[in-house]
Image 1 (spheres, rainbow, N blue to C red):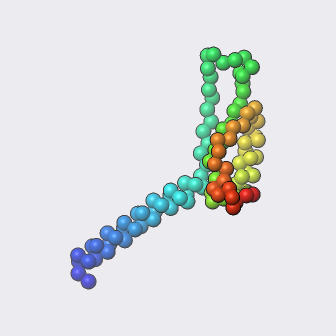
Image 2: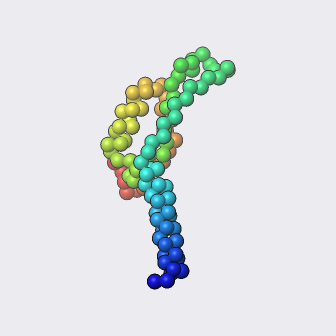
Image 3: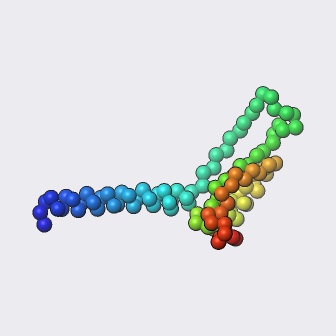
Length: 102
């Protein structure tokens, strides 16, 4: 095999490997991680009745591909421990709602 063909095959193999790694990060590993961001907010014009109110916002659970029963139960337990006054759900509960109902 001459050097030119070997370099082309080597570049092609490296390219396929890089694309595979990027796609696996985007469509598998990143979907298995939760991002938790806890913030304390205060406003100068806050109504007295809302002082100390705890709000939890969750979204993009994608039950099916990236979320199973065990992870969903763990998440619900974790949210319940936060003892929130208000829980807001931003959507994207299912990956395919017509076929993957829990």
